Amino acid sequence: MNHGESGFASQSGFSASVELTRVHMIGICGSGMKPLAQALLTIGVKVSGSDPNAGSCGILAEMGAKLYDHHSADHIAGQDCVVYSTAISSDNEELVAARQCGIPVIHRSEMLGWFLARRESVLVAGTHGKTTSTTLLTLLLERQGADPWGFIGGTVKEFGGNVRIGKGIVAIAEADESDGSFHNLPRTHAMITNIEAEHLNYWGSEEKMFEGFAEFVQAMPKDGHLVICVDDPGCRRLLSSSRSWTTTYSVDNPSADFYAASVRMCGEYSTFDLMHNGRRRGRVMIGIPGRQNIANAIGAFAMALKLGCDFEVIRDALSDFHGVDRRFTKRVAPNGALIIDDYGHHPTEMAATIAAARLLAEERAGRLLAVVQPHRYSRTQSFFKQFGPALRSVDHVIITEIYSAGEDAIEGISGESLRNAVAEQVTGPVEFIPEFDQMKKSINAWSKNNDIVLLLGAGSITKLAPQLAQPAGITAQVP
Image (cartoon, rainbow, N blue to C red; front, side, top):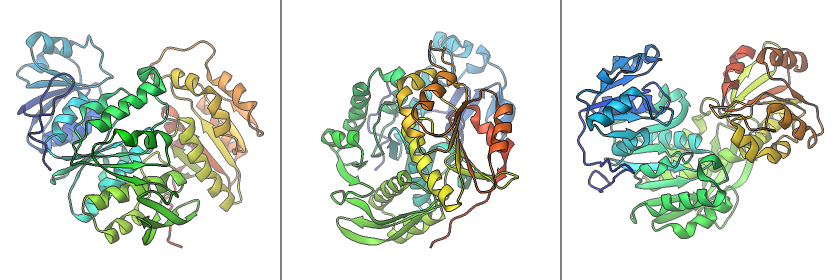
C-alpha cells in the first residue's frame, strides 16, 4: 500500500503531497537527523545542514550533503523547507530567518512523516522495546529480500549505524512517544510493545499518555494491521481503540494469536516453541537473553508473517541476531569479569535487564554488580520508589549522580538521595560514587573473573564501558 496520496498532513500542515528538491537541516549530525538526511539524499533530494560536529559526518558529505559547522541565516536561502529537532532552540538564527522568509519550518518527525507517507510504513511504538523490535523487524524483512528502509533509535552493527537504506516500498520506523511526535508519522501498520508511565514531564499524567496512544491507534487505516502485546495491561485496554485488523501476541498467554511455549532462558540466548492460534509452528532461538526479548521477537515474528515473510527465513534470522548497541552489549575486563553496557534507565527496563544478567551470573557462578546512572531529575522523581525493587537481586549497587539531560535540578532529588532510598530496600551494599575515576577503582577492586558488572543508563555512563574493557565477541549457540 502506497500512501503517497493518503492526504497525510503533519501538525504544522506540511503535506506529503509537497515535492521537495532542497532541504536544510539544523543539527544535521544528531542521532535522529543524520539517518533522515541519508534517506533524503538517497532519493535525490539536495540536502544541506549545519552542526558544530559537521566534521564527524563524513558519510553525509560523501553522499553529497553540503555541511556547515556553524549556524547562519545565509544557509537557508532557496530551500524548500528547514528541518529542526527538539534540541534546537526557538531563537536559532536559521529558524528565525526561515520564518521571516516564509520558508516552511518543520520538526524532524514531520520530515520523517513526509518520507513514510510515500511508502508502506510500519511503526513500532511502546514505552520499552522499540529499538530492539524495530531492528528485528527490519532484519527479518531484509532477509526475506524486501529491501526495507529502517529508522532505528540505536546503533545496529549490521547496518553500520541507525538507518537501513533500502529500495523497497516498506519502511519501518521507531515511533517516539516522548514528545508526542509519533502523531506526525503516518502508519500503514503498527506494532505496540507496551504502555507504561514515562515522559510524564511532557504528558502530565499516565492517563494523558494512554490517550496519546489511543489517538495513535485510531489514526491507523482500516486496512492496516495492528500487532499488540497483550501481556501489558495498557495494551489490553487499547484493543478497543483499534479500527484495524488486530493481531495479539504474548510470551505465555495461550489466548493470544501468537505466544511462546516450552520456553528456555539462558544467560546468552532464549529458545521457545512459537505457537500460532494454538498450533506449534516450530522451535525458535533468539541470540539475546531475557523475557522481554522473547516478547520482542514474537511481536516482530507476527508482523513479519503478516507482511509476507516465510517462517523459515524469520527463524534463521532471529538465531543470527545478537542485539543492538547498548542493549546488553558485552565486553570483557582484563581480570576476566564480564562488563554489560545497557541503555535501560526506567525501573521496568532495569529490572528486565537485571533478571537476564542475574541468570548469566548464576551460570558463571559469579556475583552481579549494577552501576546505575539515573536519567533526568523529573524521571528520577517520578519513579523514585521503584528503583529499589528493581535492584533487589543485585549483589552490589553503585549509583552515580543524576544525568540531567539539560533539566534543572529538583530539590531533594539527587544521586545521593536515591542511594539512601535504595539502601533501605535492598540487602546488599549500595554506594553513591559521583565520579567515574573513583567508580573505576571501586569496580576493579570489587570484581573478579567470574563476576558481572552491569552498567545501566541513557547518559554519559556509556563512556565507562570502553574504559573498563574491550568488546567480548561472545556469541550464542543453539543448544
